[in-house]
Amino acid sequence: MEQDIISKLKETQGYIRKRTALVPRLGIILGSGIGNIIEPSGKDVVFFYNELPNFASSTVEGHAGRLVLGAWEGANACVMQGRLHYYEGYSMDEITYPVRLLKLLGVETIIITAAAGALAPGMKAGDIVVIKDHINCMGASPLRGRHYPDFGERFCDMSGVYDKVMRKRCLAICRRQRLSAREGVYAAVAGPSYETPAESAMLRGFGADVAGMSVVPEAVAARQMGMNVLGLCYVANVAARRVSKPLSHAEVLSVGLKVQQKMAKLISTIMPVL
Image (cartoon, rainbow, N blue to C red; front, side, top):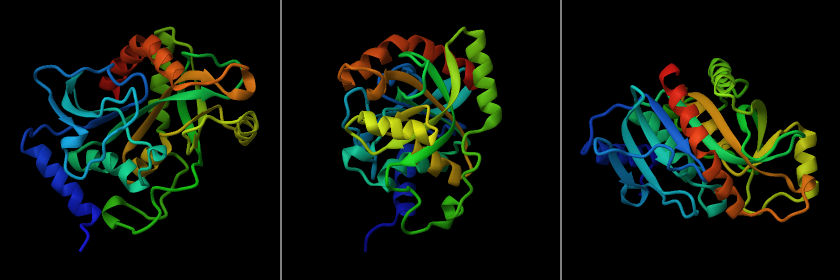
């Protein structure tokens, strides 16, 4: 008989608990290009994804594939250096498995970061976007399939996925740090190809300010499980309909290197007030 997801999660939790009793209250998912803005120290406990039972491995450049438990800025946290993507061929259950594990470990608040492409006028590479809502254009939901009551409601409310109070605090910090930042709507697409000019225009017409290939599955799963969610992305490129040059993952990683310092400062400042 196939092991169900609850049993798998408890097995992974047990593996982690053999090495650390730390209970993280904050979870952080670090996206493309910024996976090393929080580096482990000798006091932190590090797990590679491929060593954790039932945990899939990240296959994308710029995603280290490490789970780090430790204390930063006075907060006990569990940091994911890299994520899993739908376009890698993983199922929604596999993509959201880390989020559900974080909840089982004790996480109450999660910061989900990502690189994104700008759709709205006036945005430029390096800008920060605090996600206020999302549009799921991936063609799949992480809640589809067998329902586990332990995770929360099957028909869970999505009217306030991204915590309003945390968004306001984050924007206030951005102003103090003189960062170019704004709230925006994130459109999630399946990828891995970038959007065509017509697709970019469609997403903008839907009301999206930025587009990317992650965030939404994790945010939906986190919200279902009662976590407070803060979504942060940096503009890595400008959508195809607004530029003539080809888009590339190398460009995403290059911009990530440039924004690392300000993203690190922003997140370290946010952590104590969440």
